[in-house]
Length: 87
Image 1 (cartoon, rainbow, N blue to C red):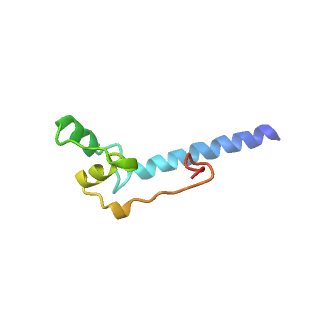
Image 2: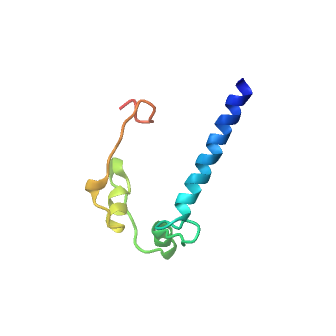
Image 3: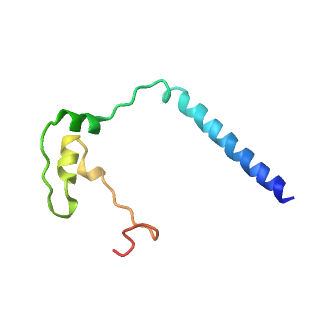
């Protein structure tokens, strides 16, 4: 009976990944047909601007300003398995 459970488990995984791949290839995502946009890599390739580290947050403030990301959108999540568990 145990091999049958393993077979069903493997089949369920393969069906799930095939289903997920189909979703990402459909509209509006078109994952395989779209060109990747990597603004961070482009920024560093261009050599535009310099960032300065500030306190414990390091380069975060300059990063958020450079890429027009509101600081209010940033959230810190603690969990018992995170590296911040001691805090």
